[in-house]
Amino acid sequence: MTDRWLNYVLSVLVIVGLVVVTLHERPRLADQRAELLDQDAVQGNDAPSGDPDDRDPLELRARDDEVAGSTDADDADTDDADDPAESGSFGVSAGHPLAVEVGMTVLDAGGNAVDAAVAVSYALGVVEPFGSGPGGGGALVLQEPGGDPVAYDYREIAPPSGEVPAADVGVPGFVAGMQHVHDEHGSIDLADLIEPAARYAEDGFEVDEYLHDRLVGAAERLPIHLVPGLFPDGQPIEPGETLHQPEYAEALRAIQEEGPEVLYGGELGEAIAEEVSGLELDDLEAYEVEEVEPARGELGDDELIAGGAPTSGPTVVQLVQVAEALGYADTDPDGAAAHHAIGQAWRLALSDRTELIADPTVEDVPLPEILERDHTEQLADLVPDDGFAPVEEGEPAISPETDTTHLVIVDRDGRMVSATNTLSNFFGSGLPVSGFFLNDQLKNFSSDADSVNVAEPGKRPRSFVAPTIVARDGDPVLGIGSPGGRRIPMITSQVLLGWAHQDLGLDEAVERPRFHLEGRQLELESAPDDEVVEQLAAFGYEPTTDLPVTEYFGGVQAMLVDPDSGELTGVADDRRPGSWETASD
Image (cartoon, rainbow, N blue to C red; front, side, top):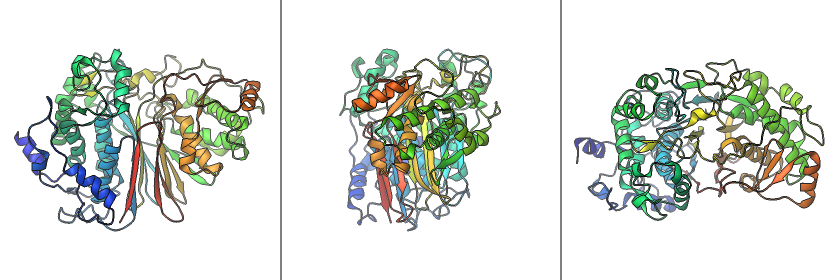
């Protein structure tokens, strides 16, 4: 063993099973954590030496410095880190059950929602290497009870040196973003929060059908000889087999030991700059996380909060408010009028997005004005009862890109985090560096030289990610988001509108068939009644159920706090293998 490995083994770390002894009232959770803690060492060509059972049972290590938004456990020493204050329910909803387990372990041990979000985000990058990770970026919204929401943008930027790489790789923001939100709000040592991800990369985890299918779909554009763990013997690793990612583990260990500087100027940054023509080490060193103005509007009588520009948070808020102004609440959710209200709301919100939404550090984005009810009602007035709003028509853009990953965390004190992390396309650019994949985010710039979204040095391109929170009387009650590429705003809005206005439980709203509009082509997850199809055709829609991939309509992750009882529940869309879990003291 190396000295570095021994240091981390002996340090106070996040590892499952932290509080098994104290969880006798929750035998299911205790059994799960005990199973993971007692997991045998995985053998194989890439398996690390040593036995995980030789490692000490580990606890969380509190940060030494005071932080904003800290929990009661912030100033605790390691003797009481596993005795969290009994202050409420907590839970995690995320795109993979192993990541959910990591987040619950952090919350069990007294970490707050941001601590858990950081740990879950790193874990998702390992168990879903196609969707997120150190080579990508993301956006996060945080709402504390009674406080003002905060939105962070740690998405990729165009190289400040001026050249857009041919591979469309932007300067990654994920590692800096995790560091930044942790510095602002975290209560647990950051290296401890990265530890579960590093362990899964080293010791391995069982491949599921979804990861296998993503590898099959991407094989023709990936350098499979550079990622032998994913492609043993040149073929996608099979479901049920154990995936080891030792190079990725080394990268995570370097981040633990050296901090984000190792990627923004150190050895990981040098490896990225060497791999990507047009990306210089100075570009990485110049990266900064942005705290942006969140998009704020209304959903019925509740406040709707989403990521700020240049994400599609503003688009979700506009879409919801225009649909409400068009009378969505009084429609049959299966009928033509409901499809029409949401479809036209999307067209109008998309038009405003195309004209006005861009990186607010470079462009003037009139966010409050375009989210006012007066403005969205004026947009709704443009829609005829039986036709299309007069906005510029674009060509239908059926895009098979479905990936990112979403997570929602609620801690004991009611803090809620909603975050979406992404590489853009699945596996991003397809370029692996140090075991993780680099994004292809810069393809989201506009080719129109007059567009507010045209590429410029240091600029963030627009994105369809839209982490969202609903607040009632100042307290967060619903966190939601989804992967799904350019369908994310409609996916999110359809669930929100169904939940708020159609007397649907959140799980019912998530399970309902979805649809998406591109130009006049109405893409339907399942065909409605013939009469509804005929009405939609009469309005000018061109209905189709011919879609490129089964994951076309995303995979919603959400957490819901009942404002009356305080009961916390979650949702994991069965369109993808997500999961959720809650517990209370």
